Length: 238
Ligand code: UDP
Image (cartoon, rainbow, N blue to C red; front, side, top):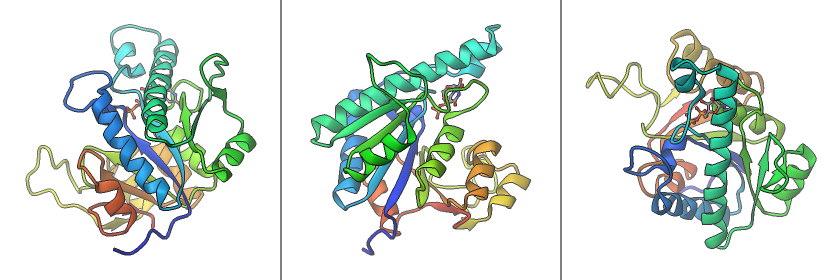
């Protein structure tokens, strides 16, 4: 196995990664398994930022589709990401990893507010920093939040752990002959409207030259393989 070329990365997990086989919510056993993989990456000397979505609990668009005010629903979605962040913090700390949760929406009794210089210091001290509440603004997603924090923290790459093993030319869940790209450029992803992350997140990564590595987090041991450069993934813009 080749060792990772990265020094500092941001790992973005969709909320569904915390759900396991459940249809909703947080499955502690799944969170513990992912925390173990994060610890293994950390133990290899990586500086790690984490962003976890909230789709396993609440998505603003879903609320808006049922008549809620979009911004209000989005704030609920952002609160859902704080719950996931706390679940991951708990699992990581139980595994012996020092962490800090920093929220874009200040909630002093629960976690630290996001302060960029302070986050930098935590990373330098070897703590895993979990960025919660996305960008802190409605009409965004946690993908955009992840791209923003990756840029602010000067991460070498954004690893996006999802339920598919990369970027395909069409949806592999509905088209059995869909093919996976090994590498693809940012502009092609945007032009072909490929479902990697939302366009704002892709553009932010492109403009700041942050490659995105898309891989399947549901498969055990995959994070270590992909970090070592021999897992199945798609590298966007690398
Ligand atoms: N959200 C938001 N602003 C942000 C990040 C998230 O309004 O900067 C809300 C939005 O409603 C979103 C929800 O939080 O649907 C949960 O995040 P996301 O859908 O990105 O989670 P994932 O799909 O990664 O589980």
